[in-house]
Length: 251
Image 1: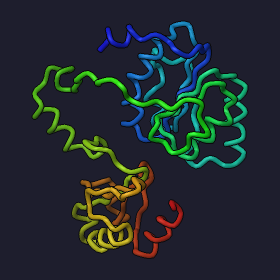
Image 2: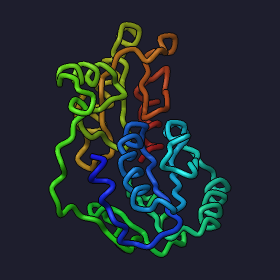
Image 3: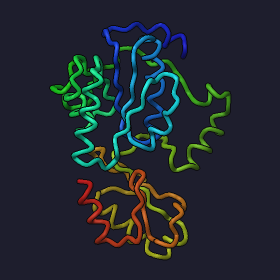
């Protein structure tokens, strides 16, 4: 992979670059090849990464980055204004939006950058100056080949830990604890209510890509069962009424 990255040539002049990715830790880790490619193509440029607190801690000390900018998960209007002021003061030439949700798209547009780049699948073309499509074959690359392990070894780890996803999940990942304490305290009732509300079964994602429901092993909240985790947020002592309030706040 490294020769491929080193062969990249910058097509956009940029001395200051901002990359935006707000999703979970796994999504941010999957962005690191992009950062290496940017550093190879722009060795003298200032590169910053805008993300949320938990993924931000993973990126601290990344040799491809000069700065990690943190956006609070539940930012107040004052915090959002301060974040936007900080971004505009940086005078970025190029902003790369890797997620393309409403928050990142608006921040990209208001950043003041001359070049604003996103993938063509994002339905907000007026907020960007360039949309990227894939016109070339992606070279085969797997974790198993990189680590020289058997595919079964990788699969065992990937299917055991609920934080590792083997397929894309929605913007809100609803992980319902299915182990003993939650089972006794009404997990099945909560699961049925969640699935009926979203119109999907455990392991499925809604057609709009917004919600995924998964049944997972113990989340360490046995004293407040039943419970589920929405991305990184715990919701405990659940009832159908409380579930409805949580979903109302997400839509």
